[in-house]
Length: 107
Length: 107
Image (cartoon, rainbow over all chains, first blue to last red; front, top):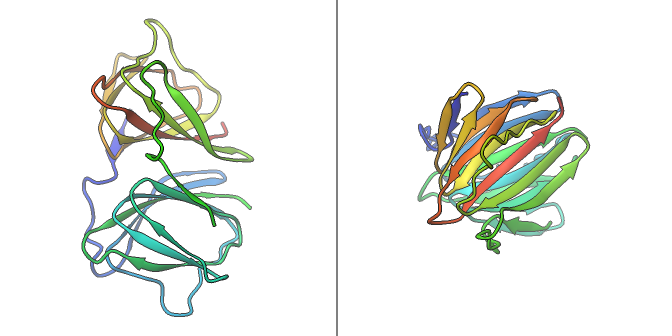
């Protein structure tokens, strides 16, 4: 059985976020996302037909929502973004890599 | 949007492992499992029709497989257990809680 580690190696995400698919099965995709200070462009919204359950594994971030709500995430914090939910990344820590686990599931 | 934290509160798993469903959708179930020194009984095997992708978030553990292979897991280590894969928990750290994230998906 093959195992791998989320943190080793940890890609350098200083120039841009790095996305890696860890598992892909019918109706399921698990990604590691590494950020380092990035945020969504002003006025940009993610809005996908899939649902996305997100766990912040390491680092710090803030998500923003269409109604103006903001959710600060630290290690261990998780949130479900239902299919169609408009969201953006308001902020990720510039001081360290932020590692996200994202589980995408069908509408 | 509601978020929650894997570590707060962390249930006391000293007497027995604690299983919590974090997300349940058609064809997908995400669980947090907290262990504290437990291992599978001698001769016992987990064998489920679902696939299970496992991330060890915190602590230390060892999984065992039918062919005698053993995989040591520390923080950030992840492994995919395909549908039907016989496996057992050989060991979890007696010194601290071990927190697993398990993503179950259809055969």
